[in-house]
Image (cartoon, rainbow, N blue to C red; front, side):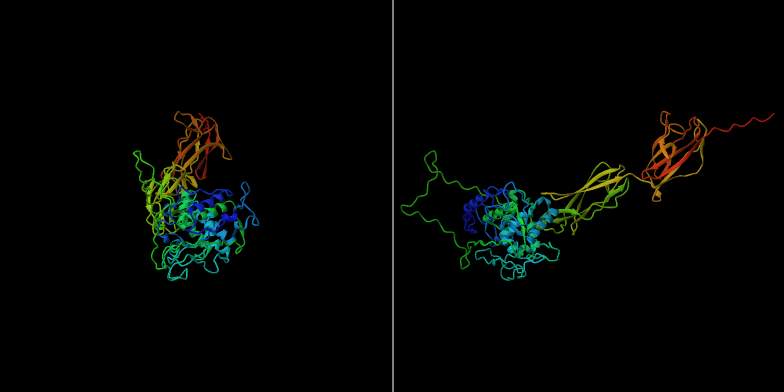
Length: 569
């Protein structure tokens, strides 16, 4: 049975029914992957019922050959057991060379940071890498992840493959006449020119480097706003790589297999696949397209075509015409597709009530290729109850991104209420990207408060203090306007409990008050209400504390007037 399942499938020659049977057999022993969509043909890349729904050079690989080996029936992890297998366990087919595995996982993390909505799984990259190059020929890469010699597909000369004339002057594939698929992920040069990445930081975009190629493949699969956790989007992504339903089923089989568990093996020791696909030539030796053979007429005595169902009147119903498949919606070019919205260096957003924020909210838009995206409308919105607004008194503003992809919101003006609020940046329409910044408004502060005069404050019992008390609050030497100040009358500043006797303020009903909440005026000045003495003589203290921690202590004295002797007669 295993030998039957692992027979070598031929691209374009093996029927869909055979491929479906193979996948069904695999599914009997493996955890199911996300299902193929009903009648899945790739949507924007594939037409129903055929191997290719459009020009073959639209695919990342130019529809070059691939390995058709299927995973073994014995999965790397049995149902119910751990998927974190140790390095030395699991079938040989489940082993992925160390550098190759690291490149797939790094690509997953990188794409998750720039396009989290895509939800790219590294196991999908591993499945494609297995089918395209046998995991870079079993992991034959150097310390930087580059293959010692290029992995090249056949010349795409139209003889059994797509016809793609040279686009790179042979720079990548060594062929100045026709293009060839290049590297561990088998990109054709024209596709690499658009999607190539520098993932290992060496300053080069090299299709022969597994790190560069894996990240490029990840971004390519995510193009057009795909969500790879959705079965239909995953099918379209794989078919955009190679427009073949058999290719899709083969990749799906390895994807499900790797999802069940893998283990790391040393570079160069991976299992090499053995059976490449061999597409049926699409042209005759003379270069013309082979005609599709017409059905042979029935021979005498042969089987005649069955008539269609009879009409009620006895006539034969005509064969119904197939419902035409609507044309797929075109996928936007990667350069025009918003990939991510990221922080462009915005620092902490904090300001004092009534002040202007030093930092401005700044974002950078990138397209699906990871390049800066210009001329993109970005909307910034303030949400919260602090009263903070953008310059001009607006809660929402829209800014167009610049050539480097950045969009800078106008300056923020803090409201008068302290507290937290948020600023949200939003861009894109089909699949909007958002970025939210936390911000806060702190109360106005003073780092110093002093009396404006030094007169002694003395009153007789039951009388009002004759001299008014005026103070000035400052912050970093400047007048501190609108600062909250608490005034408390105490018996002893070292024991600052509110006093229950001695000097006091009065409320509207004339009742004593010994604690007041006050605010400095526009010049930072604070004029205290009238102070009154009760019948208890003694020395008391008035403590004034600002928002910000500045404190001043004022001494108050309540004493009776000295009695004087009457003059002698």
